[in-house]
Image (cartoon, rainbow, N blue to C red; front, top):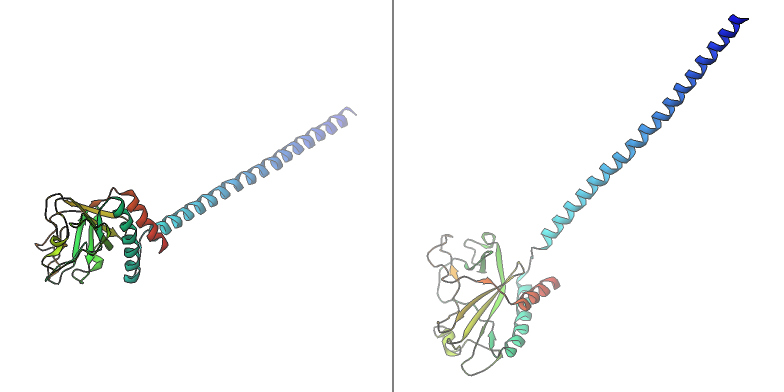
Length: 239
């Protein structure tokens, strides 16, 4: 009887140990499968976020480059000039669209120098618009009129050779505004006793597309006129 009791006791011990090991395995296996799920989900979300950010960045860069037709540029420039007319009256000055012009010249493109690079002002195809990082939408010139007229004025008078000398008072400040298709207003401050003409601040490329010798004697700077900067951004946003 004692032998049978020991045998029965042995079976019970083996059965209990087997049950415990089975339970531990069942508890361990689910823990491994649960821990994998969050890692996979986190990785997928991270990749999705990076992809979305990349697409957003690409869209922002693309939208910052304005592609404007000549007709759109003309309307934007006229709207800016109308706005500038009111500003000129406040400052007791005159303003005209005639900020740039030239007489007989070669076949090269005309341009202005700025801190952001050259701005193409007249495209003759030499070297062509693709050679310039910025292109002019238009511009205007603020000045003091000899007859005291203020606001928008017709600055051209007499022959082209006479240029600004007929109506502009060179002894007072003169500011040329250049509107870039990058959404920036550039300004050239001159006058104050120095003669000014329609090609002041501008240069022309040589007929072979090289920089040539007719380079600007003055450079435009980013205008500190924040109202003008905001007006251009407003106009560009509308197109």
